[in-house]
Structures are given as C-alpha cells and as structure tokens.
Length: 143
Image 1 (cartoon, rainbow, N blue to C red):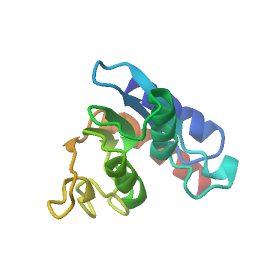
Image 2: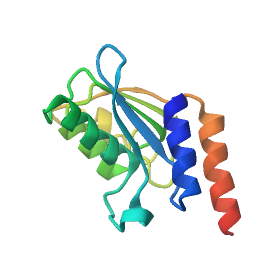
Image 3: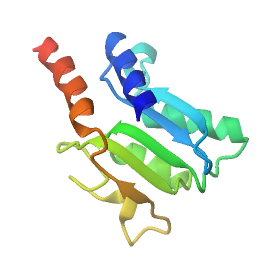
Image 4: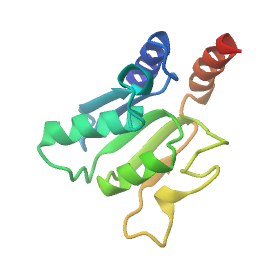
C-alpha cells in the first residue's frame, strides 16, 4: 500500500484524481504499477487499476493474473472491478471506500457477485485514513 499511496500522490500532483494501484504476484513481487492518467492521456479508461493490470499482464506475458493481488488506494469502480475479474485477479486490497461509485462493497459488490463465474477475495479499509486524506485534499483544493 505504500507504493500505491505514493502513486496516488503523484497522480494528484499531475492534476488527476489521486488514486494509485499496484499488482503483486503470488510471492508479493510488484509486477504492475498504475496511477490515474485520465487527465494526462485524455483516456476514460486511464484509471490506476487498469494501468496497473495492463503492466502486470505485459510483465507476465499473459492476461491471466490468477494468484495475483491488486492493491489500490480507492475502492474500484464498476469498470475496474470488471477488468480485475476479467484478468482473474485473486485478491483485491483497497484503502478508501467510494460511496458514490464503488463496486467492491459500497454501491455494488461486483467482485464477489455469486452470479458471475469468477470472484475475488476483498480486504477493505487498509490505510483508509491516508487514502481518504489524499482524496479530500485534492477535491478541497478544487472547490
């Protein structure tokens, strides 16, 4: 989560919503890193999770990330939750809850939906105060 928080801080400094993500393999080695890049790249899919998943898949030369963990500072949205399930990520660890668009337990629970063919373990609220503080400071500065 240290690295994800640092990536979130870098995203905020670049003018994007401060969200950072990393993907680790089964041994805990970081194989993918990402931060929000929507504003920088003008890409609506430039969420930290998607960026990290793409790098992890390239690192393994496989779309299948079974056994991997996605660590992200903010609860994933529906798009990112769907992407992690498509990649077969086994575990999601996140910091702050997203009461407006979260898809891992707050608004929706896509990653654990029994109707879907693949589900992931969820560990929520890891360093939640730090992740929330980054987001709060970013949005307070824009108001």
